[in-house]
Length: 388
Image 1: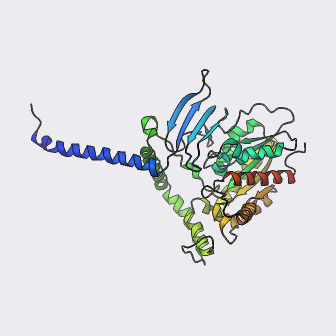
Image 2: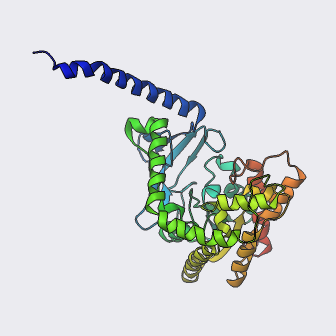
Image 3: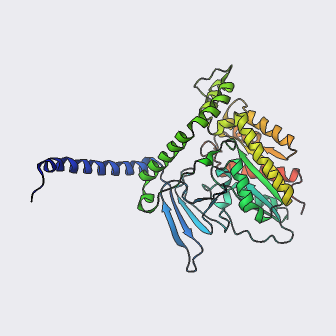
């Protein structure tokens, strides 16, 4: 029995359509790999008795992350994470995680005489684009140990963490590590609740496709924007409208033109530009209050440092309103604090040919070492780390 006439007429067109879709998909995959994000993350379990066993392999996204129902975030525990051609640094990076699911060696019971510094922060603190020995967390520990102090710096940094998420990480994982000092490495977007959007990665063979990963995570971001549109629009419009009043916002060279810098703040209102929003600092203050309360209950001290965005470092004029808000907040709460903008601006002005950032916020090894030096000097100057 032959095919119906209509189907016979449609078959060539369907075959042509299928071939076209396959060719376009192949071209899109090639372009994503060639021109787009070429990062590949491989997660190996270190728990197997017979040696490392590959758990997952993905070409796009934060596939090594694990999200809890209580709001904290971590990485795959007891794993070796291999990142090929990291999209920030372009380097191949390998590091391990402990049983708590954070970067670094295992954190067991605290031995007598050991002073523990718990480092909370976002992707700048995690620094999964640098090898261990080049991260500012590692360098900070070495600097504090150089004078004979028994100091352990524990890195609980995680990408995209805001201050509320950092409190959840402290609550769910950090307190069990018995910290003596909690140092919050803040960044300008910490008052923006970025982790309400939790991009996941595809699994199986789709997880190895750059094109599928790009489409899937782009769709998740669009869904987040759509579902939170009214909330984000109302919040953003209020402070942006107030910020723009009396200012001439115009495109231009933000390094030399203050009005162009102001326009850039507005364009980045849902990222680092949020640090110019009073509401963002109210959220930060509320989360810091919870960390303070935990400190009183569990006997650790609290300190904070503020990391600037690259544009603040390289602009000819000083744009430090977030730093002033930071200092006011820390002073009200009587908390030791360190503003890292002046040191990074001085380093840039002394050698503008030497890059401090890979992008708008993630540090090169030189800048990471500079941050570690400034933090070590701050902790020693304030007496936050005991004498040897």
